[in-house]
Picture 1 (spheres, rainbow over the protein chains, first blue to last red):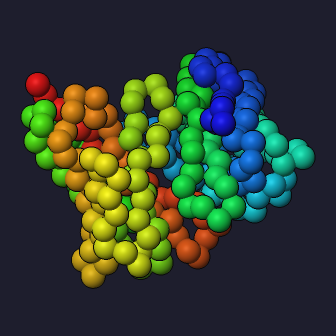
Picture 2: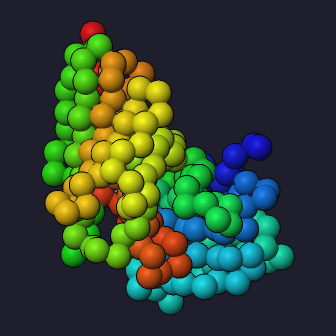
Amino acid sequence: DTGVSQNPRHKITKRGQNVTFRCDPISEHNRLYWYRQTLGQGPEFLTYFQNEAQLEKSRLLSDRFSAERPKGSFSTLEIQRTEQGDSAMYLCASRHRGSYEQYFGPGTRLTVT
Amino acid sequence: DQQVKQNSPSLSVQEGRISILNCDYTNSMFDYFLWYKKYPAEGPTFLISISSIKDKNEDGRFTVFLNKSAKHLSLHIVPSQPGDSAVYFCAAHDTGTASKLTFGTGTRLQVTL
């Protein structure tokens, strides 16, 4: 069990650029989540995958955000035309079917300048 | 609409004493509760959880108490150790959704020598 991994750990980008983050969940976990955390707040749900199917999206996930999980393994989160308000920590979590506990990766800290 | 509330942003406790972190919730559909611990620049780490059908769960130095009628839960750490210094998040699972977690805003615990 190598845990949830996320890449990159840090990303600095200029406003208007596109960015893509990757998450590799724990191998036997078929549920995968993306959250966003800003300073002084707890993580906020963005989207959820069961295997390769994206089953729920938060209203926080504007049209500029897209997430995929091809073949039900790793997942990517892309933000197009980044804005300064997108600056946050993006967290990925996974869980096993039949368990409530979600296990988080180290996060990707995005700074939009 | 903050459905999970941690009203104490910070708490300072002496080493060896008990730390009590509190959490209140408003959504009656929450059926499972979790506590996470977070160090700076890391993702949240799962600590302990409790089902809504129980009122107590214990794991070593950590005990979570749930009072459903009051919609209140608490995390007790005894004895507190300097390594427990971190931000603690309370999270709740909503049975009516795709198993996303709703987090509180966190309580920063500092354990002093």
